[in-house]
Length: 170
Image (tube, rainbow, N blue to C red; front, side):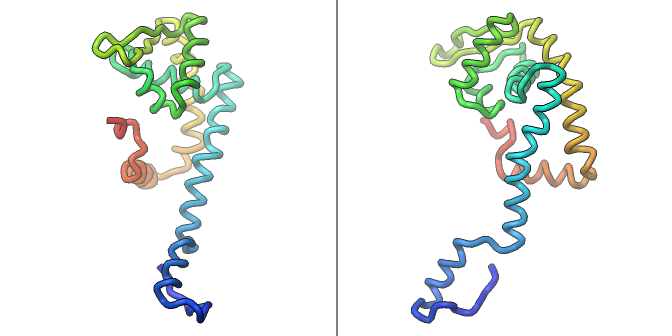
């Protein structure tokens, strides 16, 4: 934290220090602004090619993709909502549409009936396999190709420290 002269003679040093804690330093603000820009702007840039070429939103693609990578192509809806970054109600609406298209199925979890299992059908798997190259090209073009191997490792370390990776679900 940077120190500065007490701008308010009516406040003691402890009150001034407390006020300083409310503000970001220039490097902190730059880091925070960069992160917020990534979080808010990148999803739209990743979604646009998916929409144009596959007719899927990024959320829909992530839903299909995460289930396709799960054992037996099955996941609990609550886990899937976390992985796809959506609420259970939003996910439920998407999965309902996918069920009507024959891409997914749902049933109560036989191990714990409080949960619902979402499963990808062969038709749904074909959809995600067809859309994956579009998504991977966008990820490479917009993110990975812009970063060195060291940058990519740093990004992975930052995500690990912030506990925002799929592995952090447990």
